[in-house]
Length: 369
Image (tube, rainbow, N blue to C red):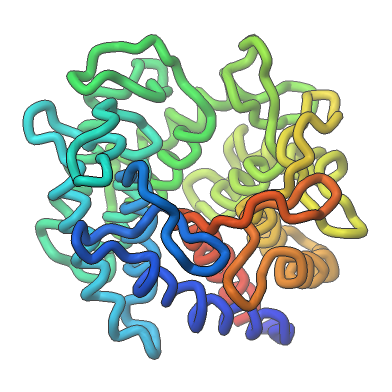
């Protein structure tokens, strides 16, 4: 039986659709390059551009693709189409394949390296966009991104290099948690729109390798670097983000990695969430001590989304929804970061953040519908 939606949900959804989304249609949009600015200041002015990242373009492609077909969002399909073209026009490397990390303010390639994080978001965005429009060119780009990840980034053990040179030569970067998580998210998005045995096998191999190389055996937490790496840590927000991906997937639910992150959720909640204020700490040492108490809006959103899949967490979910609304959202947009004491420590609004809010609100809407 559906759970009654709290009034705060309608408030934050209205805030998102009437304020946040329009920011990236108006002041956040560089019409000359047909790209979102990297960030706006608190008064909706673009910060002086230093670069434009393919990852930011892909996240905005996802944002507008997710709105296609929604009431009052007739603009979404046209904007998604422009972002898809810009992704190819500005960032695709015609010589070596794959996509550049960034371009400069004049639209020329800036950081020409190939990083997994970027390619993971291209997979994620194209899968969602293709689900809405079913255009062959979009599926072709999705397939190209999946192929380049398999052929260039894969290290042969189920894991993937975090970053490579433009010509795909090694930088000896090794694997890192965050790009791998978003690759798993991209694989899951692909499987949600089509049957794909190759991608499903890659996803299961990735989960097995992560369980072996990144999961602390005592608490089940997902470390940011492989086990044994110097100066390692874990982030509560990433435990919650991983838990949602695993718990919501028919493919991954029941794996050893799912069991680990179920344990990790409880540990991260105990050590990294202030039960009174709802604050989610940024970084913790393995013993649970706080290394960085910065509260980031994305981590708040991921905790809130994950709570929708936790049994007996309804009161906590309602509490966290109010915490997000009162501590981070305001009448001009949102606070990107608060310090450990709850004071605003970062006032700019990056173009990448609406992705986290969109996925959070989708999780909430599904929970309450």
